[in-house]
Length: 391
Ligand SMILES: *[C@@H]1O[C@H](CO)[C@@H](O)[C@H](O)[C@H]1NC(C)=O
Ligand SMILES: *[C@@H]1O[C@H](CO)[C@@H](O)[C@H](O)[C@H]1NC(C)=O
Image 1 (cartoon, rainbow, N blue to C red):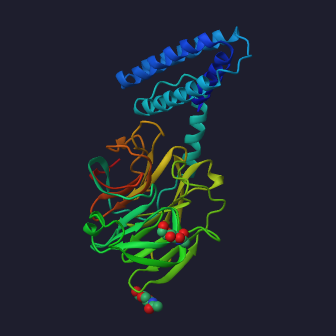
Image 2: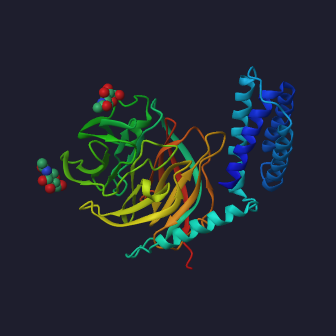
Image 3: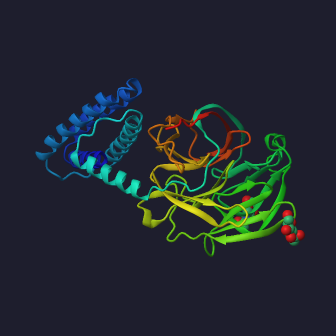
């Protein structure tokens, strides 16, 4: 946060400088190009890059002091400069997460300590045993299965059965779900034509739904947040539950249509959500698949900001982050309810390619694959797993 404030100071400094002196613009142009080139060339040399950036900032701050504030014709140039600075900042963010620079401001440490203390206060070990001990080691491969027209949506199989059926939620709100008898029916050229349409009694909202042991669990937003359990065999609602959290907010800043995101692993069902109360961090709850009762809830340290999606494997929440420009999605925050894995232990896993933002990612515990929807592409990611190490 401290560094972000510094960068913002630089942006406003540049705004003032450019308004006052056109020749200054050229200087900034030159320097920005240099930085952009360096990002490509010196991708890994984070620390050196950061300190040069700080030097550049100081230079500008010094120059700005002497300039007057009158010109407005430069507004266009200014917009370009601002967006380039924005991009550089995002790149910097990205580089810093790969190879964190030493903290340069004292305030940073304090904030961090408080956050850690707070997280520890709220940390509560799960009171049931999680049998499964696997965690992600890497993403082995990806396969693009299909491209549909809708940018955001959800596709999944039944996550805990050997059924071949595939379900498509085309968009982020509707009352119809497409059911394909097998994956091949989705991948051939007939679009959604080969699907059976299932019309639900209440519309679904977001991409937080899942199919689990023959039931569709889906999220209803209106009139309030509800989880609906729908029997896919006889097409009836078997249960529904109000979600007990208050003042819910979108869970992922890059997929703002999700207020509740359901996840399944071999142990059962989970709900990922966020509330105003928990300072912009993601919360996790354990759901009883039969009654939809919430068994336990956790405040995780994972921020909402720049999160695009999340999923749960063996009681561990994996949150996927991105920056809007040029970067690849990555698992950058991990929270384990059995307390065996922390973000520091977990490998920083990058997704192989970037199209847009993952509007949904569902873990399939039977196949050990992720079913994802990225900017209209339906993708399967194959995971390499390893054992959570005993601590
Ligand atoms: C669902 O989607 C279809 C196809 O895009 C559209 O025609 C229909 O109006 C939508 N229904 C609702 C309830 O949004
Ligand atoms: C649908 O099937 C479930 C069992 O899977 C049963 O409990 C329920 O009564 C059935 N509903 C209807 C309307 O047949």
